[in-house]
Structure formats: C-alpha cells, structure tokens
Image (cartoon, rainbow over all chains, first blue to last red; front, side, top):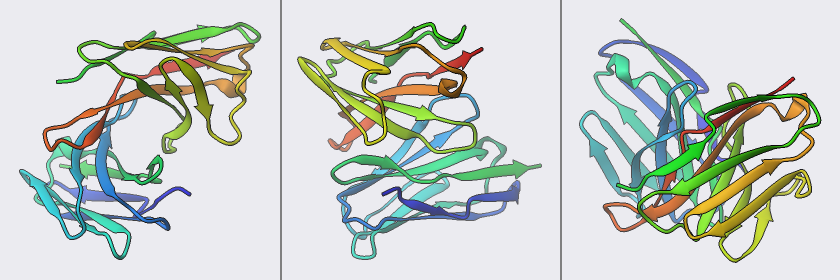
Length: 107
Length: 118
C-alpha cells in the first residue's frame, strides 16, 4: 500500500517554511526523501534509518517516528530552487513511493 | 558517485510497435534494477524488479508479456514495451540500489524515458 503524503500541494512565497508529512500503514525500516523537477528523474535528498532520527542538509531537514510510522520533511526559508514534487519512500519489504507533494515557491 | 545511464530519453512510436529502453550502471555493478512508470502528476509506481541471472519480478497488475524485462549483465537492464498502445504513453524510470554515504541502500535513478505512442 502506498504511503500517504500531506499536503498534496502547497504554494509558498520565497523565505517561508513548509512541512511535508508522510505516513505508512506498514512497519518501516527506513525513510528516503526525494525531490523531482518536472520531466526529470527524482533526486535523493536524505535517508533516515532509525526511529526518532533527524537529519538535515542546509535548510532542509527530516524526522522519522518509527512507532507512528511517520516521517516529516521540513523546509525552512524556502528558496526558488526548492520548487518541485517531493516524495517519501519507505523502506520495508518493498521500496514504495509516497503519493507526492507538489511544492511551488513564488518570488 | 553512482550513475545510471538511461536511453533513450524520449521516443515517439506508432501503435503496435515495440520500444526498448536501456539502463546501464556506469561505475558500479547493479544486480538489481527497479523499473517505475509515472503518469502525469502522479507518483512513481513500481512495475517490476529485474535481477541479473534470473527472471524479473512483476508487480500485481503489470503484464509480464507486454513489458519484457531482461537483465543481461551486471551493468545492463532493459525494458521492452511490446505492441505499444497510446495508453502505454508514460514516463519510464529505472533505478538501482547502491551504498550511500551512510552505508544504507539508496536509489540512483536514470534520467527517465518519455514514451509517446501515437
């Protein structure tokens, strides 16, 4: 079953913050986050391996709650380059992509 | 880092013809390759998993006779869409698992192939 992401789409002004949530109905071993620009392949952002683990890269960070089978991606002080569709991917018995969140950053 | 080369990047074909898409791992060996299909404004849906030296594993609802997958070597996997029809028009992407900096498996994607069937 496909992990569910929320929101489905969000529009931000440059500099604003956003949170993207991802939840699964199955037990999780790891969470990956990817960003896809239109017409391109997804690009790996980060992977979280342990429950409660948080990771970050510049102004993008993520958390992983293994017990709740949820992960959240945090984008702070968003930049125009952050626009794209974000996907979570849960590593369990299959690598299944989430439903996706389309992020649009406007100047 | 790991690179997966996918060709062609786009193809237009007539209904009823077959199209082959290739994915090569350039600087690492990929014993497994995942094939995804993505329709506009939708997520990537896993079609099948190819394994070097054995038969591919197809996801439920994917016709194995229509989408032929061959993993000929440790660096090459191919997807052939046979007797293509307009409803097969989509973005097809391959990916291979590899070791990331953390030591865990991360996916390296090919650039994708956009198929348009007229």
